[in-house]
Length: 196
Image: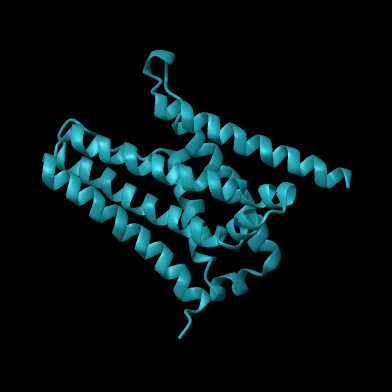
């Protein structure tokens, strides 16, 4: 029996939460729970989630520009990828709370930009289910998901930029380049559609 759209959405979210939690727990049980190990688990989960977000961000413009079978498949699965991104970041948030509980020198500060990004993320997850999507209507849904995608893309892109160049790691540089490429693809697709 085939899964419904809501079941697929729930499976993508909870599957991503479970997989990220399992991988993080396996690592932390091996190394021990301290500031360094939790920090590494946070970096890895945040970076994996950001790669998924970049793919989601670029899916529609890639299809508009290339119209290839793989871009069509990517676009069809964009919602599930977006929900999986939120699942990874839910586990990431759990790691932040774990760090606050286990590392005395770590002081959890709730910042407005981070809270805004997480708020958009969860609103988008909730409205990825058919009932809430119907409740807010197609226009509000489109505004929420488009605005939310840009807010999250900007927020997580900024999180990859170090305070100084000597703190720049190769992985951060690669992610910044990928994000810039995704943004460029989106701009090119926008102007191509306006011109046609």
